[in-house]
Amino acid sequence: MPEFKILSNIIDFMEANGATAKEVTFEVDQNLADEINSKHGTKYSITDLQKAADKCIANEWVVHRALGEKYKCLGITSKGVGAARSRAKAEEIRASRNLAKKISDYIDDHKGLFVFLGFLIALTTLASKFWGIK
Image (cartoon, rainbow, N blue to C red; front, top):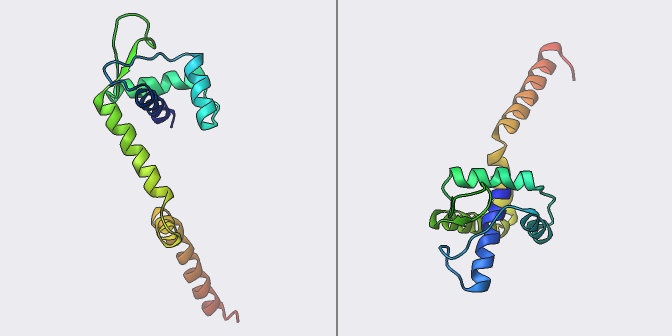
């Protein structure tokens, strides 16, 4: 999701420069797109990042720091910092799971598929008993 990539990019800049969230402003332009694409190996366009910025503004993760153009002079809020760090921590935990937990989560995420497959097996067994197929 590009909105979390924007937020994490801002946090990386803050940490690298020792700045707080209130001091940092950014704009959604080609430089931001290039930086995010090179860092994450993605191919987001400026319009993709503008849509993501709109989502960030709607969730109050990013605010306008000055009047003017829509995608200039944006700043991250403390809510945005929390959302980005929470997402990063969740991805870190998800990546460090063991094989048994990954299998368990996969089954949990795809319950409907397994129920459907079980139904097909039961139906096939019933049909073979009914028609006498051996």
